[in-house]
Length: 443
Image (cartoon, rainbow, N blue to C red; front, side):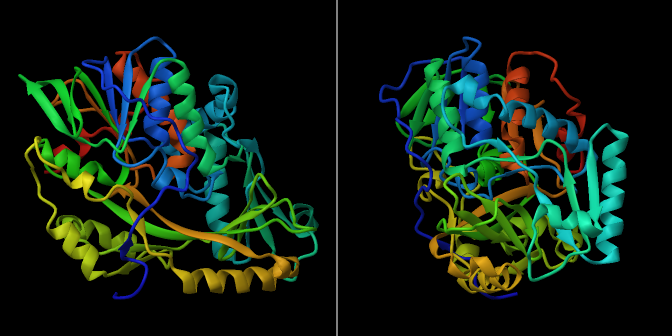
């Protein structure tokens, strides 16, 4: 279980720069903790309706998962309970450029998954049939239809799975574009300004304490990604069973004759970028072994045993960082969130090198493509692989949006639902499976 890929390195943001507000407000209607795609989407949909909102991000907007993912907007193989949220989010992705007056890099595009085995075919058929039962259109191509997606490859595939309405966007652009759009509607954006904790009045919230001062509010959205469990513990709410995965991606510079392709050439995931280059990564991630996960180790075993897509790895430095992170802290002193402004795993360079060799074997035209950048990122999921998207019964006014394995896909939809919850409106879809209380009942 020891090996590379599980350590952290000094972090920096890949995303486009967003202007920060300078003057801390004395009060706002809603404080949002976290400047990823979920948090800034919630800010946009609230500010658009005249609600005063302040977003606080310990690093920079989209500096972690929202700016470091593959850029895919899809829902293949996902639990059917997630599909309404995914479809809502797809609808919103199509409108974000117009709503914000900014460029997210979104465009509709087939995301094609090629495969050969009968086992994979059975899984694809099962998911397609489940999707059809709730009105989604997914298809399996075979035979001569395969060449229509990607002609001329050195490797012939027997089958391909694709679904209607899929798309891509540019991770470096998207969340910053939404944040800039929210600012146009009056939202405040504070970067390099962590929320250390909440002040309480009775059962409810009366203020958020940041590293720059206190802001009065009665409603808080916690959209802190991988940092959410630590924040939840500090509020005395017990554990939130989540685990993280680290992945590495590289970008290839544009070259003449490159195919307009987005999809999976096993084991290589390829996305054509806006400028004609390509994001290339794997469907495999590293799961760091951390002390905070031991409580849920038995529940994690089936996930780790499910296949090679999640590889457990041990990094002593990361293990020690997690072990020494306090459960609670004083709000007048630096919090753990200020110690790591950007959580950035080390790059799995050997994996990327193997992927490039395999991509060039399957598609010889990539032999002239040059690597222009490589990066790594962390994603986080709950133990049951469903997000938390709900209010918190124990603390009225607190709402959580976290644990989205496909967070880039679901971000706008999740932000929209969080806005509904904050405003006391019924959500546009059924979110009963995403309650925070489901983990409280298991204690």
